[in-house]
Image (tube, rainbow, N blue to C red; front, side):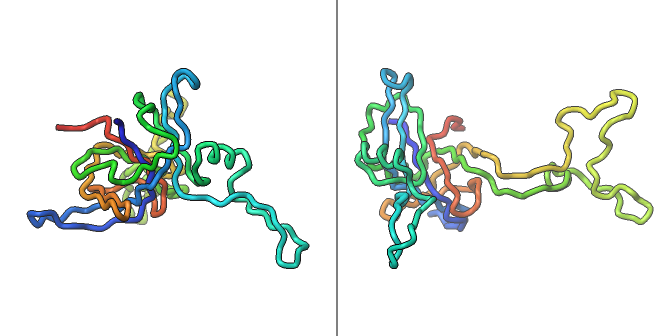
Length: 227
């Protein structure tokens, strides 16, 4: 059975292994997730498992204490979404993601997926939206070098020559320039699961994982395991 789970990033810390070596780890709150839909080749054209993570309130409209003003939860689950979750027999979820598995028929609706689906030593791929850095210059964004900082220099933190005026009379594609940095989907492959806390649904992963604290992280079995 292929394995995958949704998690939120708690933060980083460090632990010591049996021989006393220090290991930097990222703590992930992995699950519990529930299966909200099973897609098959016959019905949907492909095989996949849809899972939900973190409970979410409904969009309920009711009266305030005075009975005059209506209170509306605009961040809640819509009527259509609520029907989808009720059909699966689960509570409304904030995050819903789909994993393409050839063995999707091995899962069942409303089945709970916990952190213990992974074990110590497993290799995983972690996907999340990286930290947004806003508009940054070429030095921070691309790691370019600065120019002389003396008074006579008029080239300090510029990204360098953009191109000759007559030939090629344009800027080549891929030129490192200032711009928006971060806030993109990043996948780090072949990370090692150092420890699994089944009771608290925690995964301790060696090294860093993309995204800020509380970010949604997708954990899958690695597709690029190294010997």
